[in-house]
Length: 67
Length: 342
Image 1 (tube, rainbow over the protein chains, first blue to last red):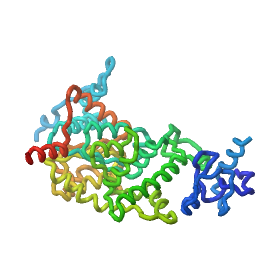
Image 2: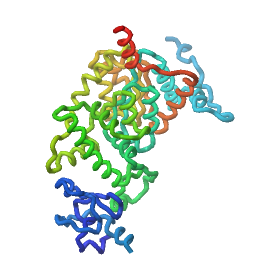
Image 3: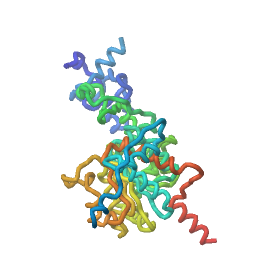
């Protein structure tokens, strides 16, 4: 099932994220390696956004929860 | 041998009348003496003899996902009660121990599930146990910090996997934790394949961070002299193997290297011997290597360790009830050394 939010840049649909507080927060391995705070909002967009999607439900659920 | 020597003991039929304790049921299994029931009752007898043998060091080898499935407290209690002397485990079982020590959970799930749906929700499956990805991620994050701390404290020094396990246990504040119990009681806990678990991934996270000052050094080869010495100094050795794999071979090989061979052996597995893999290899095969003595008190129980092992422990603990307190081998030696130095 294709997510309709994947066109937008969100940390939750990039290839560097893992669930941290599902679905609101993700852990960014890339930021951790760079010594930056690795815990970011799922609906945030990182400066190093990488479009390789993990095909997960993070964005969908985070958006749903926001409403 | 005459025919009458072969037909010695008739099968007695299992009776379940009224409320039975675990050991009473095991005694009924013993009366049957057949198939899994016979093997389980023999395993209980052997474990009891190991415990009552004051000169036996008991090794517990842990493989398979028994900790996420619910065997965590049981193992921690065995360590605290000193009903095992040495634990050799897969890294993964201790990863799951640490996950719970840090507040994570394992959930009852099902084996019939849409795994791609689980993937999309960041939920991992271990047969019918579910683990949220975030519990692994939180573990990795915490471990990376813990590794920084251990590496700084031991700058440049390589730790054996046993030292590493104790360092972890020291930093986990949870009495039900196996790592914590091993650290507090001084029970050696070895993780010979530590790299092949989330502990390895956490290392990668810790070591790949920009500006990292000291990286953790763990040298699993350093385990070997310790394991061999533990076997060597003990008059007798016994092993209880759950699953098999690297933990079983590490324990058995130490018995071989110390030129002793195991005196007692209980293996609980569902693996088969025909593939030549170690986890299914029979105890007779192990005798051929000199890892288990041919005259050893031994049995292989073919069954699910999640059912067999708790029953085994419950049955034996019931037999030990009263004021029985096991003085473990290593503590006794320490006491003896103190006594002799007076």
